[in-house]
Image 1 (tube, rainbow, N blue to C red):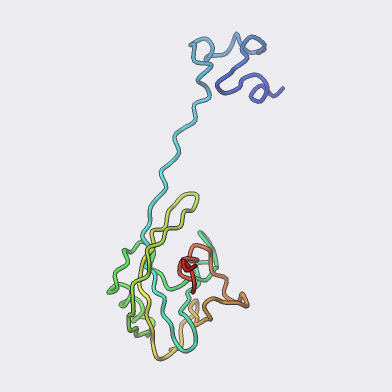
Image 2 (cartoon, rainbow, N blue to C red; image 1 turned 90 degrees about the vertical axis):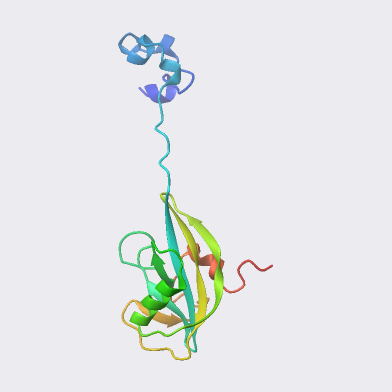
Amino acid sequence: MELGALVCLPGAPRCEVCPLASLCAGRASGRAASLPCKPPKKEKTRLPVAVALVYSPAGVLLQRRPAKGLLASLWQPFCLEGQVPHRAALESALAALGVRVTWQDPLPAARHIFTHRVWEMGGWRGATDTAVPLPEGYAWAPWPDEQGLYPVPGAFAAYLPGAGKG
């Protein structure tokens, strides 16, 4: 018998037809109409994300996300998760890859909401004259990638060419 679907309805219990009414602690305490109590929704974790759109003659710098976890194995613009978008932090991380950037302008703030977290994104657009060889997990790629060789999640749609223009 589907008591939860047919008898013990949230906000409108039908205790008078319930075969378990004599055993029900909610009815005995006078709280049957307020049951079940849903726990409050968990607050989404807010995570700053520093984004660098770095252009070279070979395309934009992309990095591959880890094989497990959020947006597994997809490609994204160069990012530092958990970092407020400061140019110095981006510059230092890019220098570790051998990429020297001439910064052009700040990227617009963007937000992407997942089920359990919110990315608060911002960053900088820049360019480099040389497409240096990159380690595994990084690539110079067309932006946007019309052929789908480098699938980029929709979280970065605000940074696609033409986004927000209209």
